[in-house]
Length: 485
Ligand SMILES: Cc1cc2nc3c(=O)[nH]c(=O)nc-3n(C[C@H](O)[C@H](O)[C@H](O)COP(=O)(O)OP(=O)(O)OC[C@H]3O[C@@H](n4cnc5c(N)ncnc54)[C@H](O)[C@@H]3O)c2cc1C
Image (tube, rainbow, N blue to C red; front, side, top):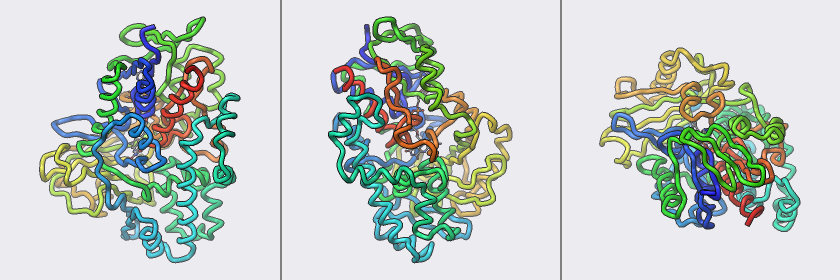
């Protein structure tokens, strides 16, 4: 067989697995339908400007975090700019909330905005949980358990601090706010809900304490910006893969994964058939289920697959701006409690290129990425883009973040655009949302058929944002090596 491993898609999960397996001397082929790598976490060029495809915020590089692990394992070098202020939140009452990176500074800010009652104890508790979750995640790479070897590895690596986390999987963030008597604080509840939506893809009653803690403490870890855009995070990874004996095959759309009778897989692509001993699917579960031609596997996946009404897509706008007012940070979440017309989302996320980044736009110009959530994408493909665009620009103008007359260029993407461009079922993006009835150990494990097919990406454990997908790629590579080498 020409390849040891073929990987479907070149999203962050897939590239992580490809880099780690390449490091172990395996010959990997990454099959990407588009002409560039990185999926929802890279940068593309249009009209001479560099726009982010999806993700704009970057965490996961601190000790015990997935991107740090990937970089340390491979020696990949990425030029990172640490943000002094990771984010500002703009509630409807005109206040500006600074999400300071230092815990004490953030607690003082939270007390200033939401009142002194229990903010300190709430945030101290959450931060401590988030630290334990991150520390556990890389020591428990066999989790979720799907065979005896996993069970044994998990027991060997179990620590009392990890066991203490378990009750958090049964508590919702709503329970946690109730415990700290914060559920009556309307401004705080709205703040938490909208922060959870961008980090855990769901609201207080559905997000468990463990995911909720890491999601809400996102800004308390190192937040980074990559000059030139996330393509300069992706390029060092693809360079590492291709300069160490593996390949990335662009314009190779995978149409079918066919298990061979003895061992190995035949992969049908738009450019012909390839074979490999192992396969990793880096595309969503919904897509994987129709690609793999094995009825038993398809049946086993059924219980994990979420339908469109339980998923989110995005309405996003990419803009070039001139004369952007000097702002304290590049990331802003703006609340719209009445909901945006057509889109219905109650918040807008705005990210700007760093003022000192000269690679994405000419001096004096800024690149802006705007995104909002759209629930149930299959039934909300958005026909009237102009109405949604106008409504978003109006809100950003009212909050002093963007001036309409300063927009030099604007383009927007609907769930239909995401479907066409990423191939993800229904145009669903951002990963599977958190749901309380789905416990951590009930999420899909990286093994697809217990023979040689694996999974990673933002719809399998733990799959949220770049750090989660990176961890899913680490786990897929780890389990493949544990099972066969
Ligand atoms: C608007 C938006 C904003 C976001 N903001 C953030 C953020 O600020 N911070 C953060 O951490 N995360 C953010 N995310 C989430 C994050 O970008 C994604 O969760 C993550 O990048 C998904 O990675 P993945 O490995 O699942 O693969 P994907 O990014 O989904 O990549 C899959 C790849 O597979 C390819 N593909 C699909 N089907 C086939 C096929 N049949 N054959 C071959 N190739 C195929 C696609 O072209 C794509 O390149 C955001 C996402 C979006 C959409």
